[in-house]
Length: 461
Image (cartoon, rainbow, N blue to C red):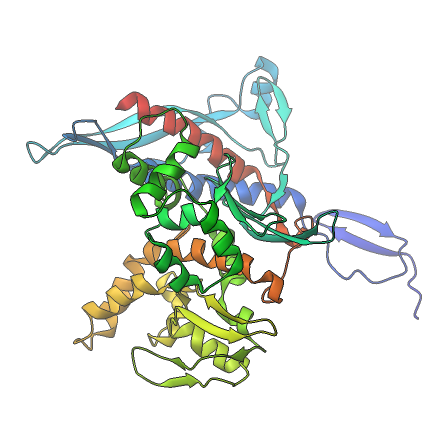
């Protein structure tokens, strides 16, 4: 191997002499630039996302609505003192954040007024990636956290029996934790509360009777075990049973229970996967990655076109799995050594399978939610205006790539856990760096600003 002599390395204007003998595989990133780029993202996009989440704020009567129209990012020229003066005077290097708000009177159907308000001084980052707070330079340290996603685990009890668990972790919102015990009872914990049979959660999602649950998931032993421990028997009793565990001591009503479940999981303001979370959810729950190499126990037919995709007895290839996934087939029955099992899809499909376009041009960077896409396609079923279709898809990007968990995600995650014992799917190492992410300065500031604006929302009401 060629030996390298002492040679110069350059980092900006700095020159250092390197004594290393091996080539650098990966160039050292500019770590200060990472901090600066993250803070710049916070000023340009992060703040806007928070305002979009909070806006509009409505009073309890529903007559008045307060919207955040726009804001002016703070600039260095607007700071009261320079960096050097701030250090001398023990001051904070900051600039004013001004927001334009609009008060709308719904009762009289007229705008009351537009006004620019002062929201406070926002600390500015210096060119070296630091902040000057009360005259002292401070640094916000990035955090290494578990990435949003779905993580499965397999452990053995003292008798050698396999126990299967799963944790559904959002970026912001309630956790779901599944576990099985030695008696093959399948439990779930919602938001770190006491565990309940998983069928209680399934009923609360709208699959009410025992027959409907077994028809959806197949006749699974773990499901039978959970049904034997489940005191609820329909949608309403399942809702109330789950509500008792999440809000113990509060008066029971179907309306408040239904409202709680919807806001806890399906409200983008309270439940957020972030882009990385949606990517990891899709990667884990995609049907294609779970059925490749397995044998079909029943024919798979595209309901929309009537075309046979795969016949019973065939081994699923990658191409067939892609076709099954993108045709939004809700479930596929496959044959294992022990029994037939039913694999559920989370109904996320490739947009290009339905629309001839570049998804990136429409602001779509991920697979899309088929029920939302189907509604758009039905609206343009008799039209050949591809431009109007593209605009409709771009407008509905938030619904097509939901940042919150969907009902199909939850059902598919339960289904995945049931089938780990049949070697359908795989377990995860939560400590692997591929399952962790950096939470840098921009995101940390955004989270704090979101907390502050949530308090402001309660005060304004």
